[in-house]
Image (cartoon, rainbow, N blue to C red):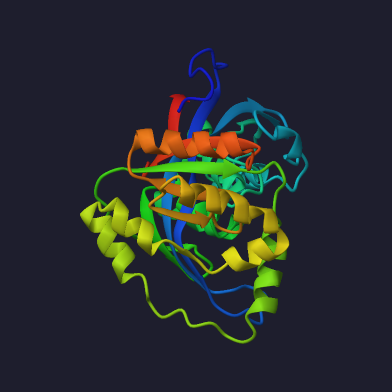
Length: 310
């Protein structure tokens, strides 16, 4: 999906596209002393994109357009802006940059839109400034920025460990089709994890229980993959937002192979049999009024990539 034209860029500008994600499985351990929860997750990058245009400038600034762009912070807390500064610091660049974010991934929707912005900014600034940073260096910067940023950088399908930032590529065959029920009301990741802690006292077992899911990916078996979808945070998300039960039920009634809250929510992800079936599930979401927006997508797709410019 191309959100904006790839031509008519300023002379010193780079456009990068990065995907959102769905957690096919998300298993969460108990809260540790450092405040983080260890996770074991299987990511799939899907064709719902963020685009970042990096333009040479004297200072560091950021603007945004697209759905929910008014919710994007434009001060120093912006993750894409922090990514740009990280590249400059690592490479010794004494220039500024203006970042324009074109939103396609839901904000605070459990699909890593902010992480996609950060990954795109890393790639865009590396290209704009010709820093020549290696992929390993970019991954190191990504891990410092946030747990999901490394996956937004690499895309495709991967197993995440630690905070989700330690990635191992996963073998996957074929194409999978998704319908997403998006809510304009976001869910705070921190609040969802706090609710998870209240629901699950003590350490949680992260023993590998995703063998059927990995086998389904390798076989390209959408039916088996749907049966194996799992999210330890789903009950916590439902505790905070009971209305999410409605899109979960609508997708099931529409024949979804599997349905799950994406990450920390509130986006609901439904796996379909085909592209046409994904459109039918999306129509069911729309007709029932259980979503503020509806998206369809395919996966897996590549991570952050330059699509125009230097």
